[in-house]
Length: 517
Image (tube, rainbow, N blue to C red; front, side, top):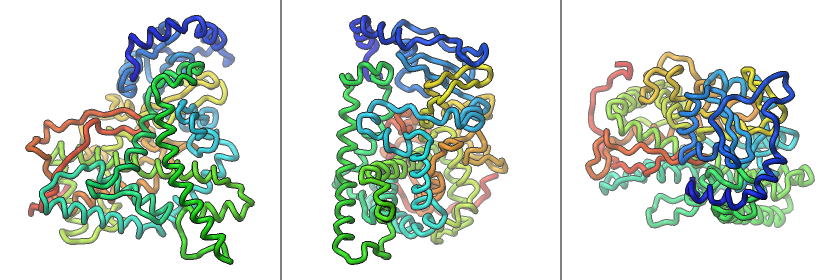
């Protein structure tokens, strides 16, 4: 955590008088209104701070270890916040399907609250009428099959630009920051879809502003935060997380507002406010706003754009980086993936989105990457809207509910050799990632399933295939595959702790074999 243990304990001791009063008001019986159900088991709690010290720097790791001791449904007390953690496919099904409605609320972190995002965001709003409207708008104007098909030329063009950049790096013998290159591609796909303009540049001398802003927001939203555990301390912003979140989000809102103002001014200067030549998402949102008497306000549009922008960039690029890291870590597996691509597409063939279903090993690589490195290791936190019972344990109203999909992906009871990267485990095995198979739910399930899942299914494999089709790869500075650093950095999105640098080289001629061999 950002505050050292000694500092946190000192703070707690200093504030004991007011915290005791606050805690006394918040204490509820461990036995609640549902029959004789009690809270799930969990580790012993310290006075005031509860289990905060059990969370650690990498909560997905520490809570996975605790779940091995206390079971797949476990409870913790994080300051004043009751938290239930589930860590098995069966328990995940209870949360995401069986009790989806009762557990469909959201607990949101203090930084999200600080920018007012919880009041207007499709990600954080309760699953009620306003949320349904925003989900419907997102589905119709960005993620519907017709819109995804219409935006295919954007993705094709941006992937071509990625390959051109890699060609230049290959010719110069330069190492490529895989995460940054993937982010530039992802951000330009989403910025062209939203605004018809590039936000990113592959030029190393160009500003990384948008990358830094997105990472800043995702990091701030995902940090363990004293203000979430003790709401009475919010105004102090002891860790500076509110300030960090506001600084990054204000800059993005400023950019979005500039596009909104320019588009409205352009419409006002025409007799006909509609322009059939404009097909980006911003125009669609303004159409909805104007046609429905501003049922969507400018503020609504700004925050929806933030949701779409964040969801379509960082998670996609981090998944590509993890996939490439795993393949570079295991050259034999990379060779199998490249052989399949060559066999299906040809050495000089042009990659099409329609080719992806013909590449079962690539699809298996993607599933294995998301099993070991889910972009959101706890998905996004849910909140119990009412007292709910899971496996005879109570999930009390207002409790935070975390689904540790990272732990499920590494569960010995679910997977053979769970810590090993073995795409072969998915060949001939019917496991999808669309919320039906609870051993693999990186996009969630139920009414809160990620609405951008279909866009990710198109974008991420195409980026990976683009990297593998035209180039072989070597680690920089003579690093051998087995020494590649695979450490994680925790946040809302699970990043590599150290960026992956690799050198694209001319494709070698190798025999084409089946991935099963």
